[in-house]
Image (cartoon, rainbow, N blue to C red; front, side, top):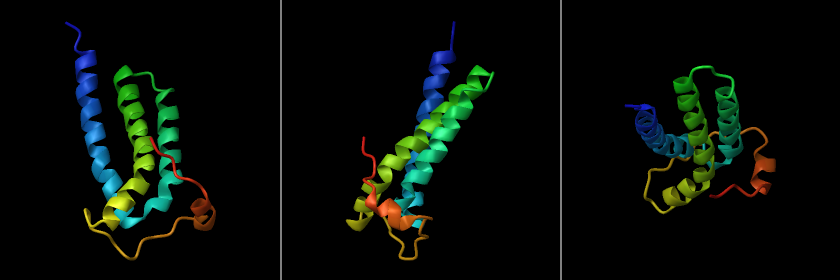
Length: 110
């Protein structure tokens, strides 16, 4: 019996499940303007998974990178949910480098 697919699915579910608190806490502490950096980290993690020789490690790292990319697309929506009062918000958020330029960009949306 080959359990690779089954265990990969379970690990994917777990890692994506950890992505929800990642999005909530990133928006709460840093703000939605950090989305390009979060996306860049995700793409770098995905690229790193290409060079791993272990199938298990490659799958885990690739799914973690994809979770960061997905999270970057959710930051703006999370900011809207926090503005509605669904989640706690914080006033003293840290502005990212190049915040003025990032404000002119349209954030990605899935």
